[in-house]
Amino acid sequence: MGFGKRFQTLFEIASQWPWLLLVLASLPLVLAAFWLRIYPTRRWVAMIGISVVLSVAVVFFPSLLVILGLFDGLVIAVTAIDGLLLVITTRKMLGDGLTIERTVSRTSSLGVPLDCSLTLRNHTQLRMRGDIRDDVPEYFVSEPTQHNLDLPPGLQLQLRRKLTPHRRGAFKLDRVDLKLFSPLGLWQRHINRSLHSQLNVFPDMKQLSDYALLARTDRLSLIGVRRTRRIGQDSDFERLRDYTRDDNYRHIDWRSTARRNKLTVRQFQSDQSQRLIFLLDCGRMMTNQRNGYSLLDHALNSILMMSYVALHQGDSVGMICFSDTIHAYLPPRGGASQMNRLLQAGFDQFPRMVESRYDQAFLYLNSHCKRRSLVTLTTNIVDEVNAEVVSDHLSNLTGTHLPLAVVLRDREMFDAADYPAEVLQTTNGQIATNSLDETKTYRAAAAAEMLVWREEVLSGLRHKGVLVVDAFPDELSAPMVNQYLQVKAQHLL
Image 1 (cartoon, one colour):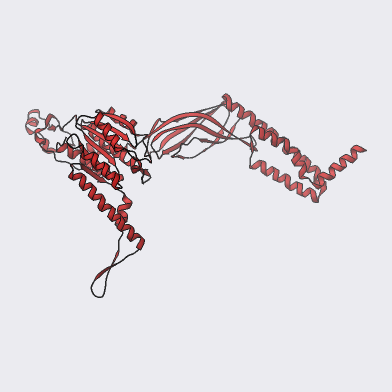
Image 2 (tube, helix red, strand yellow; image 1 turned 90 degrees about the vertical axis):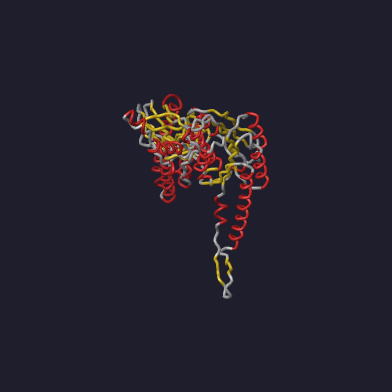
């Protein structure tokens, strides 16, 4: 009789608070899920929602309490079994149940999409379903960002994506993140697998292949490289060789052609074994952005372009990267392998918010480079302090070396100086201006004053015997190559 009264009391409590039955029954399951680090999915929430609806109905219809109890028991049993299967599967995966291999090139180019793939093999007896996301380093864009995973037992799956780097440097891919679903889709578990890969991002080398192609077809003018007339070219004869379609017909040697009964041309040589030293400023002057890339990125691309041309001319090329200290030094050398050394020395150099020590850079140059060279300083001039320092150090090189200042323009400043004003003619015939925007007009006047000062600085450099290349960052390669070819043609070294 006491047991019957107790059961009746419990029945009345359950009828008044039916949701209490679900809470008490699912509490052990929730604690187990928290301990095993598995999480419910939308299906699990939907089943709980049905139980809540039945619990509300029990308040008005107590006779449904038995149905609610059976349903809650079924939910608890199914979710417990489903969660247990997920735990077993993931434990096998953390062992030898799942193998993952990443295939990715060790090197890539800035802004060029890179192929990357994952190969997964399921060694368990259970089907693996879920999502997988490979590691994405900073400054990279992945397409797609994640993949759906549906891998039957004993099979393998290959997933492909495109990685697009937007910054040079050395990067690491350290792991693979997986989100696995239970067989009934009621639970999910997040795990990660360590998978290490090294990825080096170099400047875009497409410009070099474009130059080589246009050089073979004599169309370098398409990228702004001018044909430079050589001084004394007729006396720089090297050898005779067979005529090719890209040769100038004026170089055909008709006497040799008649003797050999085959078109023959004269090949002329340029001055070789000359030296180029690049001083690359990595300080605060090179931190500005243009088209998503820093001034240093644009400068490095142009330096590599000029180096490529110089190495093919038989010259030696070296580089010093500096800011408040010397970051890297590459001694001048010739040959095709020097191009790879330049890439290795410059691909992980980034602009720093520090004041550049030009005195240290030029002192290092004087102590390591004694032979006369074309010394190219790539920097940006924005104030009188650094303008004076650059001018003093470059002018001191004249006589020992041939200095070349590569100064980057600020396109926003030039655009601000070009801001138009509306010209009006008054009734008495006088000319007046009506500013379209007073703020922009003052800004244009300030920009124009800065540009006038800048031109005075560059004129001063030229007056002291310093060669000057003044160009926008994204249009720098062709002017630098043209200046180098002019130096070669005029035998300035």
